[in-house]
Length: 403
Image (cartoon, rainbow, N blue to C red; front, side):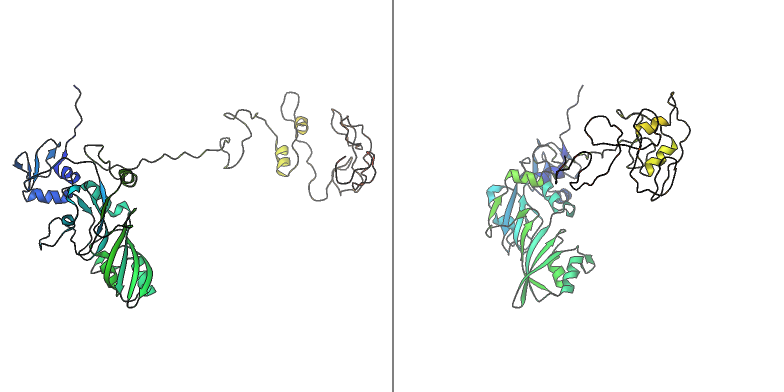
């Protein structure tokens, strides 16, 4: 019998996706006895639900998670970013419209801070976007009393420790100075409690206004104070789809971006044992390259730049194709030339001569050569006339071209 897929999930995860609170906060609610399932108070966060149960938080029934949504909200100063304030101060969630349903904030802004605050109905998404490992930069404009030196900027950019707490490197740029105040643009990646204020205070600056202008790819833009706007689902999927599967699975678990496998580098063909970059001379696995054998003298010729032609190769083989004895070494060195009866000696200024070509070996006779006409060579003497338009055996040359 084939079993059905398990669609249940822990109650903390379910309520986080429903926008009640983060998983840790839900676990604390369970410890305080504030959550009931089908009329029974829960005493363990390991309890699993499928969404068909009647789930209550503080006596209020919670609906199953809806499709994930995200809002941009311009928080004014004077509001607390919490669902319930023990001192009775007005909260962000008291100020936003009630028709958007229950939402939670992604990160916080303190009482006197203002600017962009992201809100969502998905607790799992909120948790993912708050993690420093996500790599999103929070950007602020800060107005502070005092002035800042270059050494203080270097301290902030390297990371500062305040009261034993280490704050990560900050992106700090000076915008302008107005009287006794200075405006800075600051980027941070961790978002610890009152991080910007404490870090600037450590270098002698007292912040009197703090505005968050961006959270990752989402900008404050032209939002008026107290205004809230929904992020289009297409933009939400493009920016956050790699962090969480939104509304497509019952668990809403995080999903990583698939990586495109890299193509392995192509290896150049070569014979076994060949050095890198050395071309193959032929052998198995290399069609079209005939296998051939050469003796040591031919290899030496090739190393010294002498031509390696088929006739000289055949001269060193017998009729069975086996290599014959090595031929006499060719003279080498500057100014050397081989002529008839002179294996080695100084180069002569006399015209180079040679006998008629035949099928037999060269005899060293005088070389003749007439003009190239396409007919077989006749063996006439080479005259070596001037190349600048003078007359020769082939007639005068036309200036500037080939005849």
